[in-house]
Image (cartoon, rainbow, N blue to C red):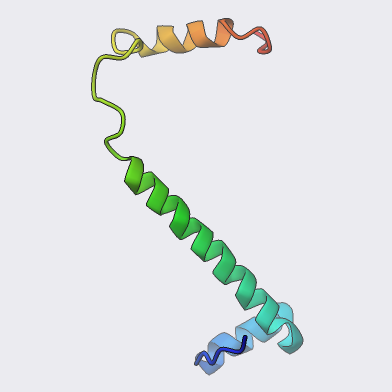
Length: 79
C-alpha cells in the first residue's frame, strides 16, 4: 500500500545518508514496526499495573533471602 508522508528536507537528507534513497521505504517500515511493537509492550505493562498485590508474598519479610532460596532451589543454576 502506498502512503504519503511529509518529512522535513533535513530529515530526508539524514535518511538518505543513512540508508540511501532506494531504501527509504524499507527503513521507515521497519522503524514503524518497532515503534508499534514498543507501544504494544507499553500497553501490556500498563494493563498489568496493580495486578500483583502489595503484600502477602513469600518474599515480603526478607526479599534477598527469598531470591537466594530461589537460586539455590534450581539445579540448573550454578552457585
